[in-house]
Length: 244
Image 1: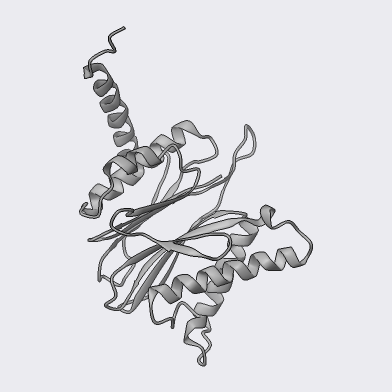
Image 2: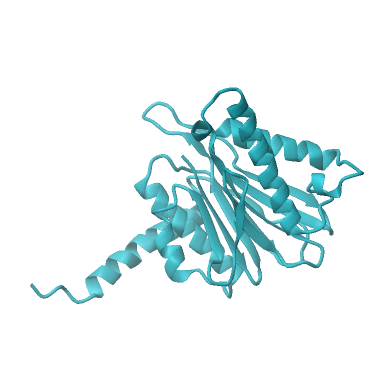
């Protein structure tokens, strides 16, 4: 399973993904699910994936190939040349749809090859934008009333985001919130696991220079996990009991 979170704030973007692809008593493996694309000073993209690994790998590989070798006659065929973030999200969606259709054409069930992405970035002076892209290739955009997206095993980490996330948050504050969401998810579901890949992006920076992999023994993650548990216990103790 997978857990990925993306927040769109006025100050920028915070995006994080776990790395677990298999989970069992004797079968645990990891794979990087967060990818970045960059033309320094011009455009940046951050993409996180969930679902069938063969599909997501193929989508990323195609986008990377097109990024390195764009078609000069079609600006909408490469993330390196698309004019807007909308066109970038459309390209990712179309690529995903094409890859999945290839499996269906071979007589395989489309349900077995479902995949989704959280895709964010900034092009030039356009403000950063964040999208959730579905298996069918269609997508929605994060807005003021819904500043975050989740894909994968999202239910355990969603309550804290619903209560706290807002577009006015500082990036460091938002990164802390995302990690607490991961802590709740990891505690409740063995199919989501460390390490966590995270990107914190400042609006108009147009460079991806704040990337971090958070390992199991990361001092900050362990600290906030312990403090969050303590804070929850204290909150429960201080709230008046139910009158039976």
